[in-house]
Length: 248
Image 1: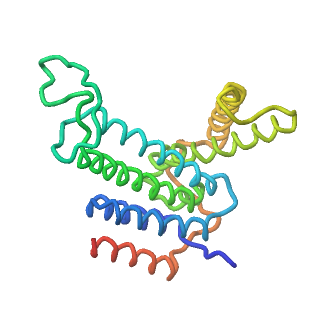
Image 2: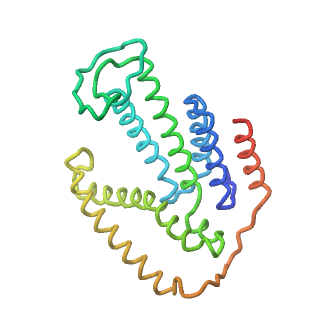
């Protein structure tokens, strides 16, 4: 199936509107539904590029955040009365921390509240990462206005870190597998971390050298070899994003 071509800002508009709706509705069911919608869009429209593979990692990161948020909500926080599921030994805290405790009765309401907040936080992260997976950072940078260009460069570099790390880890693991080394488990972390750090530093130096060679920051004038136009399909997606915000 042929993939449609969208404007670089299209999916960012849709993702920001969807994330705003998730935060506004504040419902884990709605958040999970929006994550499902964005997942389908990503798997149908993403490119076979480093930024396209970053969505899978964002799902794993979101899952870890959900687990950590649930544990923190259960172990630390303000007691919520309700149906007691189990009890954890209470760790005494200083007198200047009233109302907060570590341990104690874990109620169903407390667990549900922690999971609900975690689902909403993770949903927003996944939805925004979907936009990064669907949009080439280079094409996104080309459509930014001049007065936002320097800020856009910083944002694009920041948002492209995860895709580059994913691509680098994949290359390092492939090289280690060809050498007969194990690439799974905690023991392989050191063998991956050191080459990854070295490659990241080399990439940073190459980026700085290329920006300097192109005269970055010398002139405010910009040239576009191929202008990126806003098409009708982009308007349809933007209207769908507006409809999601209005309905929420």
